[in-house]
Image 1 (cartoon, rainbow, N blue to C red):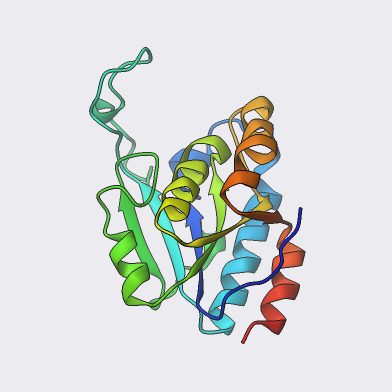
Image 2: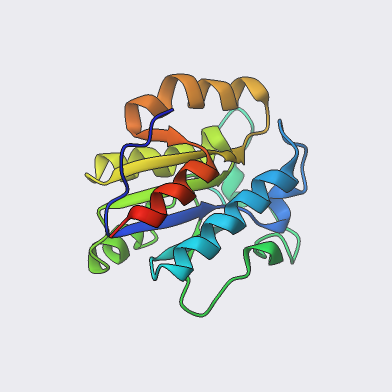
Length: 187
């Protein structure tokens, strides 16, 4: 876990902290994850840095062993962002229908228009939405930082695999507090 720096134009991306996703059991208690994500969002807003709140309203249409996730019906409040995130008018809402927040959403163009060179990621699920978004950000040439205590997964094994095997290859990892401290010195 080493965060070396945050670029002057870093955006926070909060993945799938919404009613329908957090309602199912997770590997870690969801309350600290949400609290840490909210702390990050508030800090980014205070510094005038972009906050991107991502929700999901569907799934990719292809067949899988678990069925066609794109054909699933969702409850009316499924995609509602958690109130703890304190969504603000200046925040950017990205609605996705796949695991990653870049696919078919215009997120890449938005970040480019905002001259963003780095992203900090948090949310659920570590090995699904967060990892997919981190992969795309890395492939797009963005510096990636992952707030490990502001994310969780459906299972501990999936979370640990992303954290220990995948994330070190995609970016830098650290805690919410480390990122908050780094934000204080970002110019």
